[in-house]
Image (cartoon, rainbow, N blue to C red):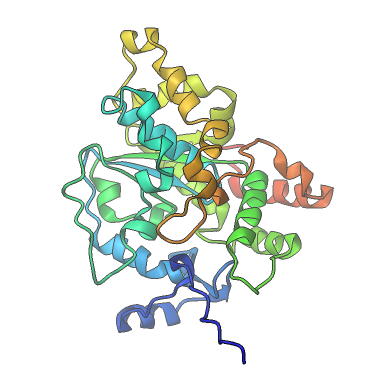
Length: 331
């Protein structure tokens, strides 16, 4: 007689904790669609959130208090988040880690060093994190659209860095990522199903175009507080863009640092080749249960041409042109 096997352990990122009655009532009132990874997506404040993320989103909005010295990295999923997390951490903490051969990025995944507000920091509404002991500048990330940011982020004077990416590449990267994270036995999501959802705006923290426009407009209104950059610009001129980031964040490179090659040192440390080949990123896991390797695929510009048909490219380009018309933003 065979010994019954215990049920597989469900990783935290797939767990949907029991919400409070107040949250349950809110979630049940929202428009709902089938999710990409978990069961459902809910349209909250005009953007789609996975059921498993909703409690973190609501708790973050209610409890996070931004400091003027805080730095918040905002992205839509799969827009180069991991790379810019590493760059921001290495940039603003460089005085603490002068020896790049003993840097925290060599032993920790960037998502641990720059935690996501709604996915990492506020995952449990019953146990609120104590953030008072974190040394300034505190670094956080988020995928929240502008409308859903905690009020303190909008009004505290903290710095927001927004990284965008061509929607075709962002979509293809998201599709690959989702299929790495889907529950065992649920099969893969087809490219065509994912494409239909993405075009309709039904993806985590989507619609993509509304998300991008919210922060683009904010960067035009408040350039001293909101910095908008494209993944493609970072890839094309990384040293120039790193210097621009340093200026915006109030920590420009000194002549001595320039002489000693600190800019190039940070870029080498945070390069895709270096990070993706570290032991921690090849075999480690995040506390939520995601494989670190899932965050490193190619990191290239234009990879979408290897997956999208001519018709798909035309459709996405048409949507992008229509959605961004008159904004001054182009991909």
